Amino acid sequence: MSATLDQRLTQELAELAAADLGRHHRLLESPCSRVVTVDGRQRVNFASNDYLGLAAHPAITRALADGALTWGAGSGAAHLVSGHLQPHAALAERLAEFTGFARVLTFATGYLANLAVTPTLAGRGDAVFADKLNHASLIDAMQLAKANGATTQRYPHADLAALERLLAASPARTKLIVSDTVFSMDGDLAPLPALHALAERYDAWLVLDDAHGFGVLGPQGRGSLAHFGLPAAPRILLMGTLGKAAGVGGAFVAGSALAIDYLRNKARSYIFTTAAPPAVACALSASLDLIATGDALRANLFARIAQLRDGLAGLPWHLPASLTAIQPLIVGDNTAALALARQLWEKGLWVPAIRPPTVPQGTARLRISVSAAHTEADISALLGALREAATG
Image 1 (tube, one colour):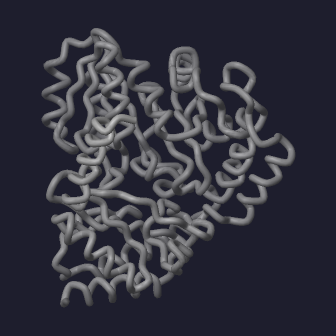
Image 2 (cartoon, one colour; image 1 turned 30 degrees about the vertical axis):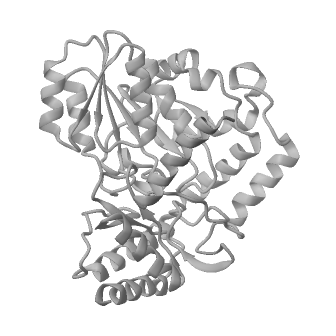
């Protein structure tokens, strides 16, 4: 490689480091769980999205191992070639029943699932209206729709009046409202009943990413729609990831029979991707059993969230109004957020600092991920370390 090519990359990496925006891996030397060995040290884990503590659950790991012994290590092809095995079909049927939708497509990742929906439904003559704080995968999906000729507009976060003005002014033949249900860096919930009402009023698709609501919110953990008592309406396409509360990996898109058939025939990130290993589908079927019967897990999760929020009152950092497992502590400055994360690390607590471009400039934060696996003592230890850091 030429010195010129190397020079540009070196310069950009140096600029990131100077702004305290450089990133590196931490190495886990134990399974994802409440307490992990990371970079050679034991730490209480407030960094994962394992909201129900299922990532290392013995029933799921057994199902994964048995699935591999029965069905092999890989699927061998895309779903529409020869890679759609019986465990994939069984999982899709179970997810459809669990969410209340007619049909489901499964994907290897949530990123692929989101890339399948918006650019497939929106092209020339269509319009996409997206919340400004949507996940990067939804933003990239919107950009692909724009490349297809769609008009794309981002409305201020959860600003229903602004969204309605955009919808009312749009002459598009097909309109899509696209939103996270639980926003991944703030933990707040989208106003789903109002978004659904706007979708009805303006005859729009409502595309929802329930990555952080599935398994946690609603009766039996059925997700954000169930939390709000909303039906599985034909105009809704619901994406859910299965590597967070479900504890394994992969994702799904749920919708009407017609919409899912359309995506199966037209969505490039479904058609041209090798299917996930069938053993993963076996593990996810076991996970669904635990989610459906996991009221005690969810009760402990919400008790720990309440304990944390009560204990953070009066500390100098801003705590947004989140009642979900995502509890952001807004520090502001990148360097200060990293310093606070290092202080907690030295106290045996792993809480990651999140900085731009993941969050807006000036809003660097600690993203505290609460899990049903956490104990009262874990939360008390975190609160004590934060009080100590606040008093310096």
